[in-house]
Amino acid sequence: MIEPSKIKEEFEKIERENYKFRTYLKSHADSDELDEQFLELHNELFKDYDCSKCRNCCKEYAISFEETEIEPVTILLKITKEEFMDKYIEKTINGYEVKGKPCCFLTENGACEIEKCKPEECMEYPFTNKPERLFSLLNIVDFASVCPVVFEMLERLKKIYGFKRI
Image 1 (cartoon, rainbow, N blue to C red):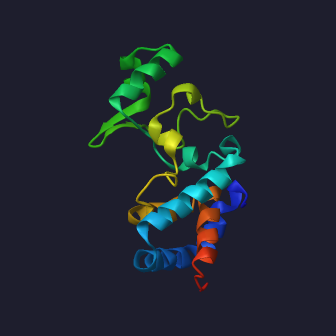
Image 2 (cartoon, helix red, strand yellow):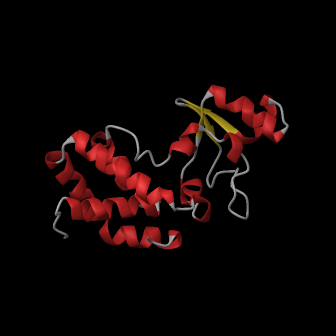
C-alpha cells in the first residue's frame, strides 16, 4: 500500500492511465460485477487499514452535514447550535459545509475531534462499498489521488481486467 504522504506524487504518475482505465471500464465492465469487485476489494483492504494514520480525506475535502447530524456534534462539543453554525459551518446550496480545509475537527495528532458523531459522509468515504460504482468512476479516480486504499483498488482492478498500462 502506498504511503499516504506519497499518494499525490504517485497518482500524478498514472493519472492519465487512470482516466483511460475509467473509460475502459465504462465500455467493458458489467455494473453488478464491478460493484461486487469493489465491495470485495473494499472489505479486504479496509479490514486492516487504519485510516487514522492517513486522514488525507480530512485534509483534502470539505465535509458536509445533514441537518440531523448537527445536534449530536453540538452536544459532544458542548456548544449551542448557533455557536456551532457561526464557528464551523457555511450554508451552501447543497446544505451545511465545514468552513475550509483541512477539516477543522482534525486535531494536531491526526484524530477526529467528533469521531463519535461524525457525519455519514465521513463514515462512508470513499463509498467503494456502495452500489452503482460504474456511474461514479470519475469520483473514484479523484479519490485515488487522496486515498491509498482506493489507489490500490484501481491498481488491482487493472490487473483483474487485464488493462494494458500506458
